[in-house]
Length: 71
Image (tube, rainbow, N blue to C red; front, side):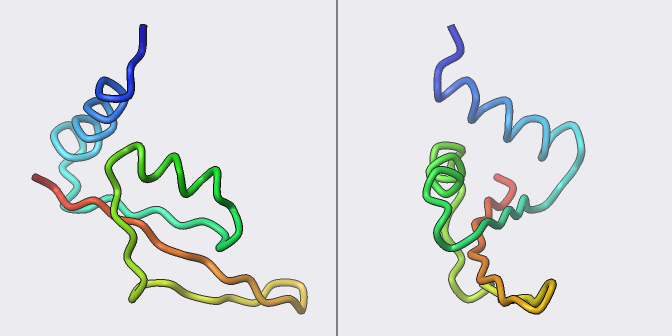
């Protein structure tokens, strides 16, 4: 069975140990609560100072950022 701690460990191991990343960053739409929940389950922390807004097709999109630093 694939448990939450195992998924979190695989996520961290792949990004930090195997790929050598110093930080993993993810972003999603401000109203996408399901994606935000996944980021939290992976151990990522909300980074409100990194939030951003971009324009596409004449519409503004507000994104929020989560990050996890290498151990």
